Length: 252
Ligand code: PEP
Figure 1: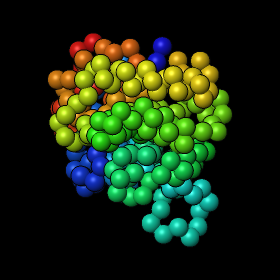
Figure 2: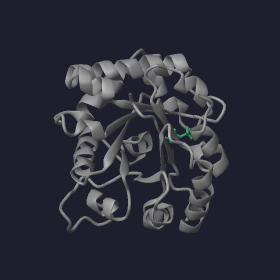
Figure 3: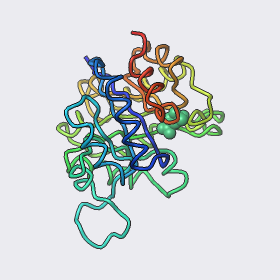
Figure 4: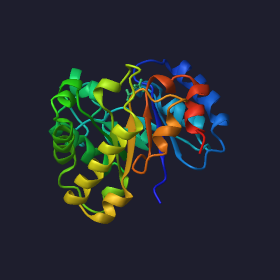
């Protein structure tokens, strides 16, 4: 039985005070959500404060990225995965499409970040997804397969339980254009097949695959009704406590 994960990515939207305010508003609204893991990803600067204020609750904190480097030292501007763990993170998101598109993230850096996060005992939400023109050219599966094999190659069986894949078609992020539950299911089943080929049947069966791309309170139930959709990575609709809580507490 795969426990769903519903994660909110707050991107670069909130100050420390705003992050704390939203986190504290969210806490009681999702206190009874035992059916899933609830995760929020504030900016680096708010991580520790938010994690401290959520201590003892069922809401976990994620970093939005981490360094490829594990050795502390001369890496200006970078934050090591074990420092994120030290600040209270339980998860790290890596390979988000905004980082791939605008900050030179590659499958190789995703792979190094994934290993760094695993070494720091974080769970890793690894994002994959095709651009619109790639889907229209019929290349969506090939793109996603390449991202999975490049980003997650060489992991051992003991690493795999802490890997979560988020399928986020780039054309659905922040556009209001969600993949239909059937489109998402088709790609999620494909991702599970790739995982089976790369690792094992057991690892593939246990893998949590989240959907991301304009998830809202009114489309989450349809997405979650699909066999291979094990949760959501939510951007815009996670910024307000009540809409994120409505997603977490979707009609099951
Ligand atoms: C995201 O950025 O990961 C995302 C899914 O954003 P949105 O929900 O706003 O489409």
